[in-house]
Image (cartoon, rainbow, N blue to C red):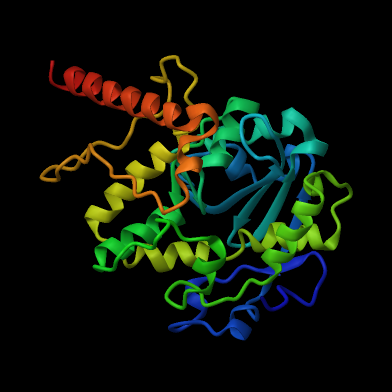
Length: 312
């Protein structure tokens, strides 16, 4: 990936309106650099983010970094990409007070969070801070839907890595070799994201994970048809909560988007497990597969309950 900016503390956030057709890698990094803000207090965040409003709807890029990012891990940073700035919300330095200040925005219908693979981020937010991530556009889901929409066969693992999505000329056409550098560092030091102060590598890695998401979002939105848009919203809602099941009623989660008139509701999903990967699906002593079964039963029960309520 080309350098995001020649100015420390700044990075380019490309917008679709800046380019005609596929942006070459050098040109996409020549967009006007935008400031990077390290946030340790809520007062450093935009008021329209802290106080979501139907009069000021936002679309932002979103990602999280941490140690073993899940219910039992540690959330360290939340990255927010606005069209005019990037914010690195430091959960370690700002503490629970700072993260909880972001709760209205992360749960808001008025703020669209564009993210690549929301499942573990949502799990960490829910179990560590009681935040129910809502109204996401998951670019991994969107990619899969676009492949189906355009009649292409699914990839062997059924997903698209962020690195490969960035490299796809239909959506960005940017190489990201630095990602492997960070992965190597994480293998050597699992506590990489707990280091403070944030050094230049950490800032660059955190920023590069979100600064292209708005560009990709707009490229995808112009291709998705109505049918795919509906499934994007439903699957995004379900992916946000798929690892957040606690065994109790989750009726307090935002409702799954209703089925548009004339469109058939999708109930059954087929899981295609690549050869040699069944152990990951089953999990230790069957924990993962049991969790999937419980989640499916709960979702089916909720759908039946909502249907009966709607027509009673």
